[in-house]
Length: 91
Image 1 (tube, rainbow, N blue to C red):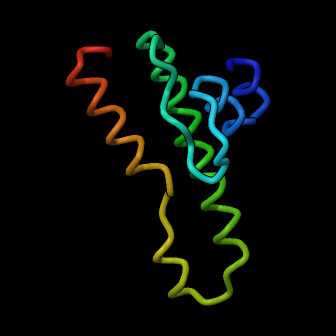
Image 2: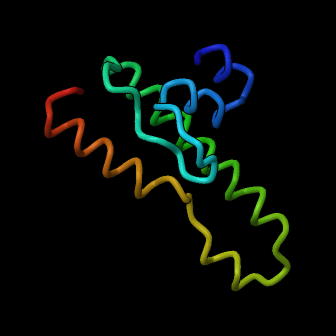
């Protein structure tokens, strides 16, 4: 995962630390036995993948008002996962 992060392959780095999934549009949950560092690396990679995706979509828009409605698509999922990990004292 670290090598993928160094290459800027954030989505792939997050996928290596996630459970296998058939649906590529929604990131799957983290692996069950990740260390706190693994949880952090996955969360960082997923956040950065969302920021990159958001930036790419903003470039394609022409209307300034449309640009204000975009946000990182993975933030809500990350908040839920990190809150669950915190409550289970996995962090």
